[in-house]
Amino acid sequence: MSAAPLKVLVVDDEPPIRKLLRLGLSTQGYDILDAPSGKAALELIGQKPDLVILDLGLPDLTGIDVVHGLRGWSAVPIIVLSARDAEQTKIAALDAGADDYITKPFALEELMARVEAVIRRHRGHGGSRLVVGDVSLDLSQGTAERGGHQLTLTGFEFRILAALMRNRGRLVTYAQLAEAVWSADAGPGSNSLEVHVSRIRQKLEAHGEPRLIHTVRGIGYRFNPEG
Image (cartoon, rainbow, N blue to C red):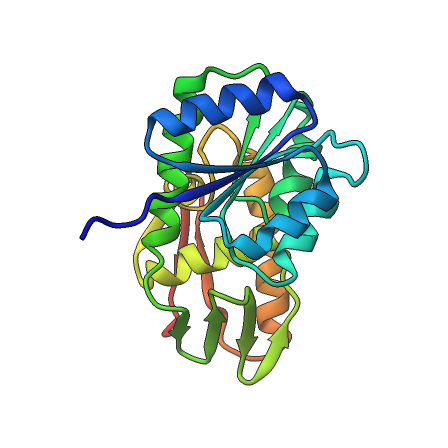
């Protein structure tokens, strides 16, 4: 018996964009749901799509609000589409829990490649729990603990920490971390990464020792609970 096709929810208030994405994704074998507004999207999430493609400029809710609403009870991967290319807007979307960010106008071929990459990364997460030393991540719920203490991480920080923990003891370069966490050209540069890693360190070290994330200056990071 062949596997059921993956289901994609397209959220955009522009009918031509929805039509373009429906046609493009359908030719690749995906089943399509579509919604013209944020509220309609949140209602359709009950149909358990495998991926959400979300425009930020919606008529009722902001795209960021929709990401927060989805992340309240679903780990479904989300690709944001937006005409806004400011770095702070990208960071806000990724921080809220989006997995990738594509700026309009976009090439359909690029979007298809991003869809496949995000689904691949999501499926590659394996089990629902990741534990290294006294740090535990629940990948399905997006929650983190150290030594039994809950860590309040943003979506951005959670994905960075998960990527580092999966590579325990190994050097992860800035480029490798970007590729593991988001599309390399969608995320911010190494300076912004340093800010986020610093915040993760502070939250980890507030609930235990030793330091877990070690900087290899100018190259990247190593997660090593043995010091």
